[in-house]
Length: 114
Length: 110
Image (cartoon, rainbow over the protein chains, first blue to last red):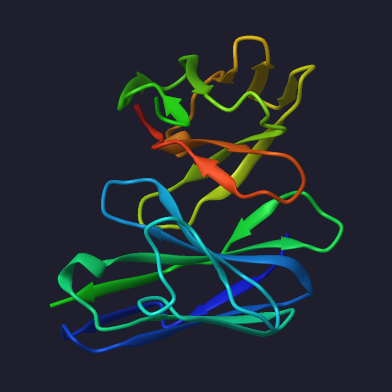
């Protein structure tokens, strides 16, 4: 399995501010994804992080709200912009390794917006 | 119709019981199927992939019925440590994205 780290692990933020979450993988991966899991809900895909180009967003998610970077094969960031309490959630990075079929998840970032 | 539907939970069972979870999916073009386990306040972790011929891993057996678009997970001899939420997960062809069910919570009691 891939070793995935996320920073920060948790944060409490004021509404109107922005938070950038980092995801680092220990080996090269083909695909990197960002998910959100709201309290009591399953995982919802926000976007696919593409290396060197704009992320591919799912319906209901836009780049202005959730800008994503992926400068190389092992690192990505997700920014939650202009936060509101509705953005309180767990944000998870997920990867598929080169030559593999399985998708692994990072430990998540627990965000609370006041 | 939701893309991936699972049994509503929670399932409360005593230690040693056998419990079965069911899942249906709506996209007949789906190619890959998985069961993930998610402990409270933790990330999902792959429990097992599901193959057309059915597969077993210790106390866990997964089965797939493509004609009925139905997936199952059977847990035998339940342990306290099996308490978690079990997520049914489906993927289309190639590197298409995963679709998650809402999960079924299992609580195993002494």
